[in-house]
Length: 448
Image 1: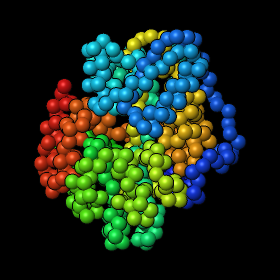
Image 2: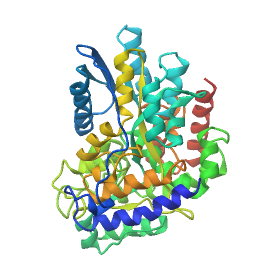
Image 3: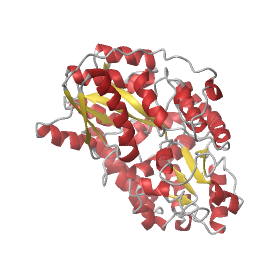
């Protein structure tokens, strides 16, 4: 499984080359893959004239708008009417309320493996039908099928994936500071100090959203402790009081323990939501509120809301290596049917198809796990290389650790890992207390 980190590290360098070219427009297909290949995927959808289908997801803003484009094409092809239902985290709680009220959506986009397992345990989720399974078998590596399966039965169709191991930076702020792209964690901290000395706060942290802090921890832990330990901690086969967790938190405290390196300090970061953490890095010209922001490929959607141009004003480098390799953590959103209807199953089939993936890929801010999708569909070289890296990694992908955990621990605002890491951001000296609280919450969650 270590190959995934190696593959992504190599491709990360390619992504930087693409960034340098100012390539954020629609490139010709031959730039990435020669002549654009014809899709190897075909999808047959039934006629659903007049059928009402509802889809719940936590997406907002540009993500919701782009997903609505995907649903719109499904409507054209089938005659169905699809309604987007805005959901809130934790989505299991949201769905539970809808189900208790007798109004469950037909399909839910679920962003955590643990939440899919909970939906199955509660007997909410319906197995994927034959047509959707055929699309999955044709278009997806086995790992993405397995992530959507519980006890050998397929329930989820992973439609959207993410490379969650990237640091985006304000190119002008770096240039003014004389800073260069770091390769290691030590270099990263030195770069942060260099940028700080130039008068710009180096790092933007969206601490109001606890999931961003889990991503910080997971990238450090994967690189430092290694893949085997990562898998063990993800399954709670080792405790959060393990020395490897102490080491990762100690490393993270090297950043969190220096509030002058974080925009607004710890208090400011805890009041900064993820979208703002991005936009404040790329507004204000060469005097932004921060010079760098860590998060996945989907950051490009938020950058697009500023005047910054990806590839010239906004550039990206792989998460710095703490151990031997730069880490790569991936995440994703799976479509799960909550009603076993013709319309719900048709929508799963559509979302597993190459045609559906291509629509959002062309819009940007999206990576598909669909291996049949031509990389030329992506709007710029940055996204093409990140998407191709995901496909090239095949079954050697490390999925977001908190998304594998029970949702009460790894996916609930104000509770579990999200809350404890927010407390850690505020008091990074309390490593032992942080470990003890993480273990206490994890033990309860994995038992239930």
